[in-house]
Amino acid sequence: MIEWQVVNSVPHISNDVCQVWMSKTTDIQSWHVRMLNDDERKRSQSFRKDEDRIRFIIGCTLSRLVLATQLNVAPHQVPIDRTCPVCHEPHGRPRLPYGLPQWSVSHSGDVILVAFTRDAPVGVDVEWINPDLDVIQMADGVLTEKEILHLLQMASNDRIRGFLTYWTRKEAVLKATGEGLKIPTLNVTVSGPQQTPRLLAFDGRSDLLDNAILRDLTVDLNYVAALSIFSKTPKKIEQYDASMLMQKGFGWQDYYSS
Image (tube, rainbow, N blue to C red; front, side, top):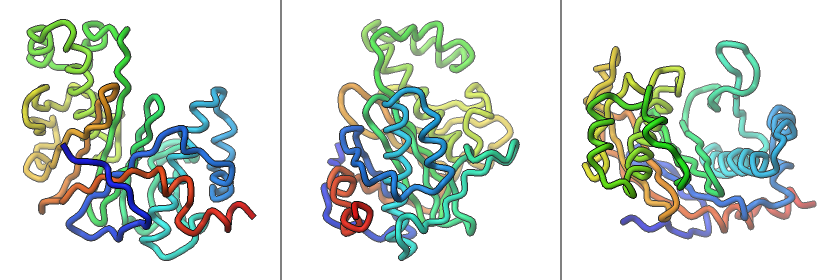
């Protein structure tokens, strides 16, 4: 199991690396909102639940702190664009105007994950294990018949984690395409729980199979998470605990607190 490293600076993202940063809702600080742009502030205020607002702010803040180091600018100057290509509202997949680096954000429960690459499409997904989840009902329309059969063959107390393993692997793949759940999850076939993560089939996108890197991420016993990268070359996965970065800002706390 890869440990989440605690660091006192943001490492440079090289072409052969994918960085994954983990934050918790308890990392929220009052100065975080000051580095957001106008659209991000407006969207944060639209959430009815405090926990949703906090998760969004942390995802934005963590993205800006890491990208600021890569681009050598202040966090609030990172030119993040969230324009939806369909409705042109600012709620689309975050990206930079010139395309690089690329990153993906996911949150569930009190965990926020952000994955970064220098030159490759990336997707990350994390899900809290809800003990009341009806996996048989959820599986319909999400898993293929073969995947559902595999799930039913698992011990009943393993099925929730098993279903979420399928789900996070599929969702990570779809997020790496940039289209997310606009593509039905039934179009994607992945290896099952307790098997090495692999993308086995992708309807209409068979060209991606040879370039897909799929990994499970260990958060804690209450979560399931997966990472997907489309790259012709291997990537070293570096996992970082963002708690110190989020609380101290590595030099930016005083700037945004003043």
